[in-house]
Image 1 (cartoon, one colour):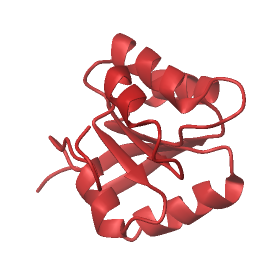
Image 2 (spheres, one colour; image 1 turned 90 degrees about the vertical axis):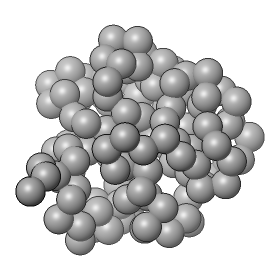
Image 3 (cartoon, rainbow, N blue to C red; image 1 turned 180 degrees about the vertical axis):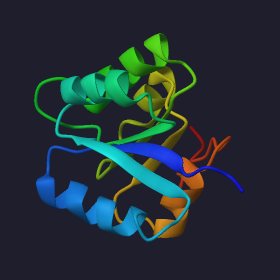
Length: 128
């Protein structure tokens, strides 16, 4: 038996966070341990919970997801970062920030679960 993947959801939209939580909690393999509404808050939650993975939007006010990803990967390199965004234009920056996956909002739940799975390094459209 494997332990659920401890996950933090980061998005400036409360509705997006709630929707992702509702989707992810349908899987016994995922445990949503916290939510955050900005990159800065994401860093605080990562420090508090030390999750397995951070599922994070790219564009947010204050510290954006790319900046937060770089910080998280530098300080906690074993924590996986999966970027989930509406924009297809940040792939190179996501790769440079160390993200394990780059997904476009509207992708399937299976694609999200695959990206969150231990050891996963994938992208729904183009490899990161």
